[in-house]
Every structure is written in C-alpha cells, then in structure tokens.
Image (tube, rainbow, N blue to C red; front, side, top):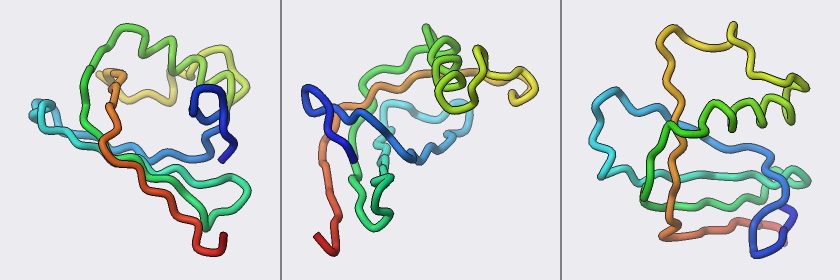
Length: 104
C-alpha cells in the first residue's frame, strides 16, 4: 500500500463490500474493510469501525468518479445497475486497524 498525505492511502487495490438487507438497523453496523497491497498480496490492512454517517447525496457522482478511474467511462453504465438500485455513501470512523505482513 502506498502512503499518502495525512496518512491516507493514495491507491486502493481491493475493498470488500457487503450489502445489508433493506431495513437493517444501521446504528449497529460495524464494518470491516480489508485492503490488499497491490505489490504483495500477502500484505494487507484491515480497518474495523463504526458507521457514523450514511448519505445518498453525492453517491452517484462518486460512482461516476470510480467508473472514470476503473472503467475508463465518464459515467457508471446504467446497464450495470439493478432495478431500483439505491446508492449510499457510508462514512466509517475507524475503531481498530490491523496490518499483516507475514514476510516483512
């Protein structure tokens, strides 16, 4: 993982996302995100946290930015969406950070 300014990574190779069923109690969400090092798949960082904010505002624009980066398209293709799909941004306050580098 390449470090960025202010302790933020410059590049994220892979993030794991999970979908909660509609109506799930969001106040109890404690996600874990594992990010693998693109240069060494044996290294990773895991961040466990608490959801502190959920918003739909800006979620489609955020997805379009990801489409430009990873798909080379200006917009996320409508054909990739599910009927009735709703996009949200979850902001997570980290509670615990775990790193793994078995050969380092």
